[in-house]
Length: 192
Image 1 (cartoon, helix red, strand yellow):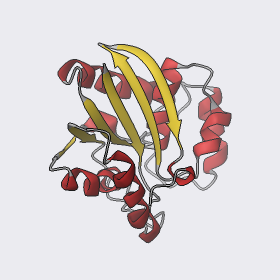
Image 2 (cartoon, rainbow, N blue to C red):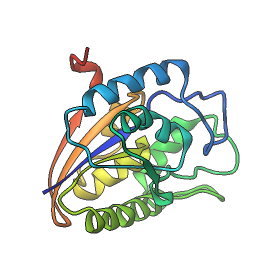
Image 3 (cartoon, helix red, strand yellow):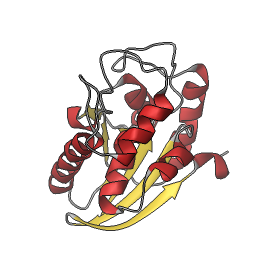
Image 4 (cartoon, rainbow, N blue to C red):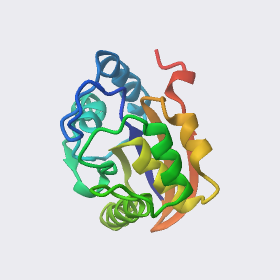
């Protein structure tokens, strides 16, 4: 059995519009401690992440404490929306969930994001079979992976977690076959 803990990054600093370099907010840096506390007894052997700073920085305190190096995987990155900042992000997001092929001129559609992330996940499952793994990820990227295995997961589910930073999803696989999913709200757990 391979167990993967997908960690949606802690709260980002939305004043920084560069997607690759957007750091965690002060609250996000503090909240990454919830991730460390949650993961400390999970026997994690491998730490992987999207290359985006906010994802790496969310799992880095745990990884360093566990003596692990965070390996970044480009294909676990968040979707590219466009080359410009989107003001009405809610309407854009709704349209993408209604039509997985919808995208802006220089962005990605959700189907492209899903395919890219699932391809990366399948490579991880082959390479690290039988391991306990943490993967630093993003809300949309993770939601498209959940949707791949459970196509009932859609826009309304995404809205539930839209402002939940950080968020954890535990998935178990037998070889490359998906077996189970558990969605974990760290703020509902007593992690102190």
